[in-house]
Length: 145
Image (cartoon, rainbow, N blue to C red):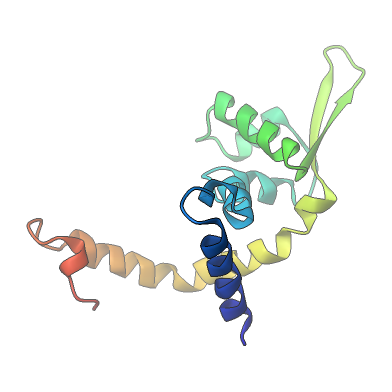
């Protein structure tokens, strides 16, 4: 069985075991909710090569609000993916680093980045086809190109 088939089977087994009431407690969903949000992967990749201060992270990803950056960093720290280091300076210096658990995420993320890079033109073409579809036809009824 391929790695992908094995992962699909494991996910399906989680879904069957938990049923509708327990889907919120699915281990896979729990983890993917964190790393699959809009900003977490970007923060992890920014911290992959060096530790950074809040302002450095904000400059690296300027379209994130300071409030969302704060929340994302707190969530990643809570999940053990990054660590926060406070230095006894005036004002206190704070630096964020990738934790060992976050480091373990880099290889799977690299595979996803590689896939996205290779498939971007296909995805872009699919979006263009979809966006050009007549508005009165539900997208579920369109045949794949």
